[in-house]
Each structure stands twice: as structure tokens, then as C-alpha cells.
Image (cartoon, one colour):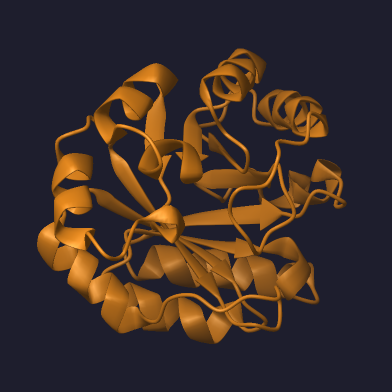
Length: 212
């Protein structure tokens, strides 16, 4: 199981110590939420913040774009050091645009993911399963941390795992993850757990260990 703590929940009055603990925790990825105030009603990080995290942490930088224009921002954050770019199905208008963005991310030598909001059926992702490296299933409404896990995400995990049978595809889940919900996601077929509040509001190493 890959653990991807979300720095959205980092205590920014103690950044250096928390990143040091994160680097030593056994987590493999750092989840970096980009919100533009339009696609979701919140504002978060720009590329310079990602550049700073790249300097102080060796963890894979898993960048989740919750923005109206993922085509533009994909390059901005790849230039800043992203290793994996995930964009939202709901942010683009046509399948052709989505195929094109996945191809462009791969041309830049990065991994490509595609995500859906809770109200969007995962069946819409079937045309992209063969090309994408990752599917991110939101188990809360995107935009804010600390929300409760939506159990309907478990059926979505299972459905994507069935669609991806025989293919190399990571399934990531984000929202309301703790030891209990993380176990349920793992049993449903998840590969990557994103956890924010659960990690950074506890002992970081212990919290990460409880999710593996």
C-alpha cells in the first residue's frame, strides 16, 4: 500500500519539523492539492510552494489539480517538479481533450492520473483506463480537508479494479481516510491512500504505519 499524506493538512507553523517527520515516516508519496477557487470553493498552493517541497523532501510529488484549466496548470506544476499529475474528468469538455492531456503528461516524462467527484459514475473513466497510470476516487467532495468518508467510494474502487483487470493501473482514494476506512479501501482494491488530517493531527509515523 502506498501512503500519500496530503500537505493540505500540514501544520504550517511547524513546517520543517513536520516534513522531517514525514520524510522518515515510511510514506512514499506527498499529495499536493491545487485548488483555484473556481473548480472548487477553496484556494491552496502555487508552483513555488511545490518547488520548496521538492527541495526538502524526496517523496514522489503527487499533484492533484482541482482547477478549471488543467491543460494550462499541468505544465506549470510539471515545471515546478510534479512527478504525477492528476486532473478531473469534470474539468474538461471532451474525451479528445482528456486523451490529449494524458498523452502530453506522458510526453513530459510524468505519470498521468484522472479523477472523478463523488457524484460522477466511474463508468465515464473506461475510455482512459488503458492510458492513465492512476485513477483517483474522491471519497469526499473536493475542496476542503477533514470531511467524513463516503462509503459509496468502496463500490467505485471495486468497479475500477474490475475495469482495469489485466492492466497496470493504480487506484488512489482521497477523503476521510483513517485506519478503519483505509482498511476498507484496501480490501476493495485500492493501491494508494491519501490522508491529511489523520496523519498531521497525530504522530505522523504512527499514523502512516497504521495505514500500511
